[in-house]
Every structure is written in C-alpha cells, then in structure tokens.
Image 1 (tube, rainbow, N blue to C red):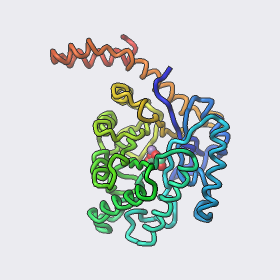
Image 2: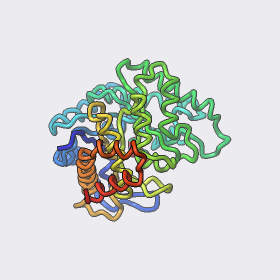
Image 3: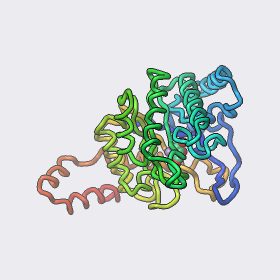
Length: 343
Ligand code: XUL
Ligand code: MN
C-alpha cells in the first residue's frame, strides 16, 4: 500500500501526434479517461482550463462556470477529486509571444482573463491550486524582451491572481526551455525568488517536474528538496528524461532508477503525502497502440510503488553509521544493492 495519492491529467492519455507527424491513436473522451484513471488507482485529476471547459474563449463567465460544474459531477461519479487548473496559454493565437510577459498589452490582458477564468473553474471543481507552466514566457529572440520588465510582469500577474481570490494558491512549473528558447523562470530557484516577491509568498510555490529539472542540467531530487526546505512544494510532475534534448515525459524511472529512487526518498523523508499529490506527467510512446493507451500510466505507478517499498526498507541506522564514518563507497553500494534487488 502506497502512502501517497496519485494524480494525472487528461493530456497524459493522448493521440501520439508530435511536431513531425500526425496522430497514431484514436482520441478518447474525458469520461472514459476518468473511468480508467479511477480503475488504475488515481485519486485526482489535473486540468488545463480548456480540458475542463473546451472552447472557453467563446463562452461567457457564467457559461464557463456552468460547464465546469458538469465536469465536477463527472468527477464525483468516479470518486475523483480535482487537483489543479492550469491556464493553457501556449496554444492560443492571442499568446503567440507569451501571455503575462507578452510585449502586447492586449495579449497580457487576455492572459489575465484566462488566469481569472482558471480560478473560477478551480472553484467550481472544488480545488484551490492553479499551476502556471510558463511555456512561452521567455524569448525566441533574446533582444525582444527585457528580462527585468518580464520578471516584474510575472510577479504582478501572480499578485493579481492572489488578489482575485484570497484562498487560491499558485504554483509555477519551471522549465528552462521548449517551446521557448530562453525562459524567464527556468528552475525551482527562480520560482522561490518570484514567490518571495509576491504579496503573499505562502500561497506561491512550485510544481517540480523531473524532466524539466534534467533539461536544466539539475537533479530532480535536489530540486524537490530545495522546494521542500521552504515549504513550497505544492505538487510534483514525476516522469523521466534521457538527458538534455526535447522534453520527453517518459514513464517514471525508466531512464534513471537511482534518480527516481532518490526523488521518492526525499518525498518520503519529508512526509510529502501529508502535503500534496504525486502527479505523473508521463506520455505514451508514439508507437503505442490504442489498446495500450494507459500502459505508461500503469508502468509509472508500478515503478513508483516498487521503489517506494525499497525506500520504506532503507536502513537509516546502517546508512547513518556509514555517513558518520564517511564510508560513501559502501553507502553507494548499499543503496545500489537495494535498488538492484540484492538487499
Ligand atoms: C510541459 C508540461 C505541461 C504541464 C501542464 O512540459 O509539463 O504538460 O505539466 O501544462
Ligand atoms: Mn508537467
């Protein structure tokens, strides 16, 4: 039995289309996904604003809330909660050059409109968390924006969200690049700086994604630990990534088991299960068939739980003795033996 509760987004079961080729699997409707998520043992669902309310640009504020209430009823039917809502600012023609940091005032206003509507949707879904993946908040042409102005614009956008609703919490999911060339807020360290500059730092934290940390050349477990040290880890997106290349969203643990083990170890040591959900932001391979559309989710859960069982058995007395004697060769071998199933 895992101590943690798991969550997933509808985008994690997808058609396999990428920048270089079309769909390889049939689209699956939201309710079918909810039913399978519940069956697989997930407790909650993560949403983009338009996952919950498609076509929202063309609806009134009241119509958006009414659509969100229908999704809430569907979640209730399967015993699922909603974890967060994230404004999807990167797909829209209004936000080609970013939202909160766009050089166009009209686009910045549109981004705030989507952020406020995301808060409305979150309220209807019964959750208090907004995630900002700042996909295009950066530059394609380095000279096109001032990093000073843009960083202040980002802080002000978050302040506006905090003022709009005094219970909502906002968390930034940092990523150093892709689809943008240079991001303004690329790591958990940046997120802590932005959080501290807002009007209510307690309500502004981080969503650490393993793959994004690897893309920044950083260790995901250390990034998780850094946010935990400030009580600012609001959620996580666990997955895996083969080095510094395009964002892969591989199943958790499939590239680097030791790194995966250490992410669970730091979450475990800090009783993260009392603070937040374990989100799995994983994607199926393009070659995966329709009938295997959920296999990567099953695999990620299975790997997480198997490694959690090893973390639970970690012999801290023995490890601490080795640490005191500075016998790190032995400590490393003990850990690896445990991961390899030899202990
Ligand atoms: C992008 C990414 C997104 C966010 C949600 O790299 O991870 O899926 O997690 O918008
Ligand atoms: Mn993510």
